[in-house]
Length: 335
Image: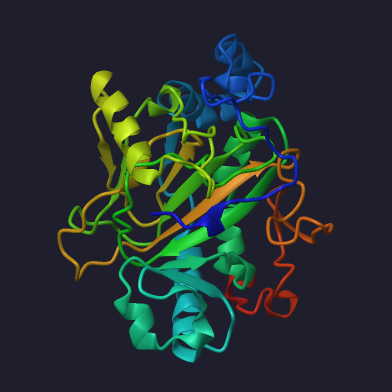
């Protein structure tokens, strides 16, 4: 269900556990909040009253359930600027922004017709934040990056983004086997509603507390590789079986435009069934890591990347298309 393009490759970034061993994240590099001895209440007492009120409930939810919800995390004006950028992209199709579709694979927008783009219901617009200033600001919105700075205790880096027009209907999965940094546990994601989401549009589904499930062994460790003897269907079965055994039932996120769902690397989630294909489910997903765990861009890890910084966090400019960076500038005037 997820293409290999999602993976991030760094030479020597990980060792593959023995097949017979139970794979897991390295306990020495876990974010502090994931460690058994973590004193979250003590940590919160060290924050200002305003920070405690803003992030205390979210950090407790993250520790216990593997996610946090931030209502109205981004402005409708910024969302509208981003949607206008996408409309211009589709209308003119003269840029090499990449899209992934089940019927055509990975292609630049300029190689496809508007009819093809609009007819592909499981389409993913990949890393359009590199082209769009509004997309950059969505990815590095203050609520997401400030919260994740508490989680990682490091500067935050946005690794990649995906934009969806329709529901993905993606199988239940966890992100870490596909989206990998040098420290695999230093991974999180956000999902921003670009419109009000209808229950029949295939909203995001998630399993609270599933971030603590035993990790799946693909037969050669934690990560899905071309050599893995077990594939995504077995991964899905493992997650849903373990959730059922623990009485973890799937919940559905039904946000309003501007609401944000932020989740742990190991939270089981997926796209629910689209009951009405005429409905859209416009959304913007960003994956994040820490600067220590993601010091180079996955597209050109051999070079020092150019950073774009907002709210004290970073993303890397596209080293393969520098001439198209920030082609869409509507977001410059919007906070």
